[in-house]
Amino acid sequence: MFEYRTVELNTARAKRAHADVLNALARDGWELVAVTPDFDGEHILTAFLKRRIA
Image 1 (cartoon, helix red, strand yellow):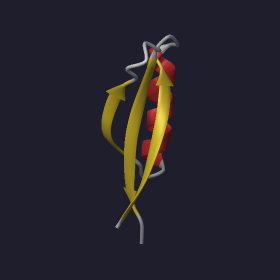
Image 2: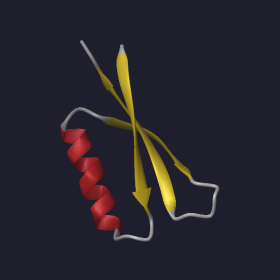
Image 3: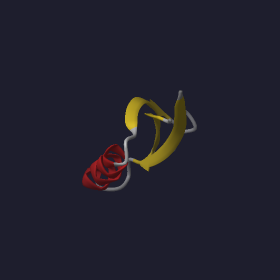
Image 4: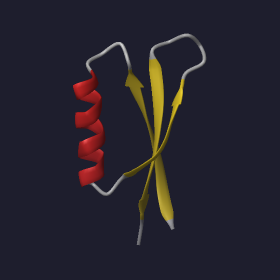
């Protein structure tokens, strides 16, 4: 069984900050599953993550 989470990433900000956020989540057991753009013209990507639960 898995739990799921989404994280919004603002592409107008530094890319290093995105990597730091995703790496911190990975250390907590989260796996990046997909990334999708925001189609409203914003500079937002939505990252979808999952991790196994006991």
